[in-house]
Image (cartoon, rainbow, N blue to C red):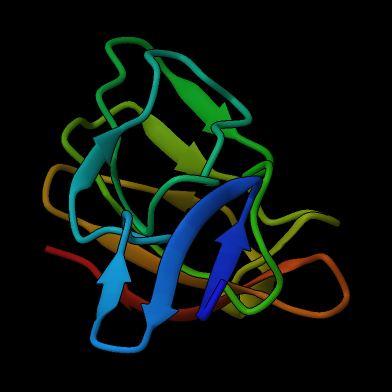
Length: 123
């Protein structure tokens, strides 16, 4: 009564009442989330900044559970991760990106359900 609530991904995220606005938790956080070791299809549902930590050569072929228009940045903390240019991920130059420590890649999920590269920093 006398309040309005908003949910996202099944959880209450915001409540507006007569005297306050209360955010339960952010939908996308500024926290850096570590990808699982040797995960070729990491989940990006709970963030937008991610760090790799692979020990052996690992090729990422897709990022799963993303939301349309979601922007993600991948920071490489290893020399063993490659992002594959394919039907799920469109990279500039239509070529795979073999990342080195400190490299970053920024992608956005289009309304075509494909991740599109919007920026890259090579160290």
